[in-house]
Image 1 (cartoon, rainbow, N blue to C red):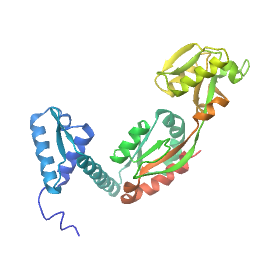
Image 2: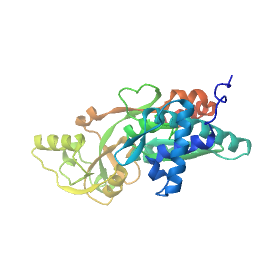
Image 3: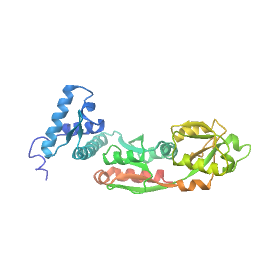
Image 4: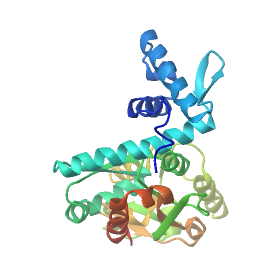
Length: 296
């Protein structure tokens, strides 16, 4: 069955490992950390691996070397194999397996972390590693087998990926409970308060400005933060307002519905690689446990 693979020299786990390291680092020089001896070794190993598969795994780019599409594809496949072998070894030795989950910081903070106790109970012997990633990064890292699952809002799933709906992400105007104890404002009254927002001028920020302008208002910018969890923390200390996901309605903050925010509602899915799910049996179980715990 595997005679063709082992009928010639050049294929080894060590060479596959080198390819995966080069792919993760973005080039041979970075993977070798500037060591010329290791660079030469890595170049030789990738050349031998390419000769075995009869395809160029690298190409020149400027003064450096980068992986070709074939190189990236083989690196993703190799990463899957090495990860599966590592999980098998840890499993037979009673060690923890590693489940790598990618999601935006706000989804990690308000959707995943509150379910951590349940996830640890439902997934015994599994180490949950979370990475703060944007949707595009999640897609790329799933394709390259750098993460196992992702939480993302995608209108259409790219080829090779599948997903399960977790819930509808809604946005609300938030104010601190200190304001509400005096009188809960309407959404129009809330827009008169100073704004706690995100850095940059996104679609949401533009919408706030448009709606406020129609009301004859120009919100004062109280503070800008780099993440929505940071906005939530800052808002607890300021008599202002912010636009946050509905799940942020926890201690110290109160949500107010506003009709103009409905256009920003979007579905969130748990996303995975179809191929990886087919070759790693435990991922089927992990998928169901994640869906059960994270759906809302």
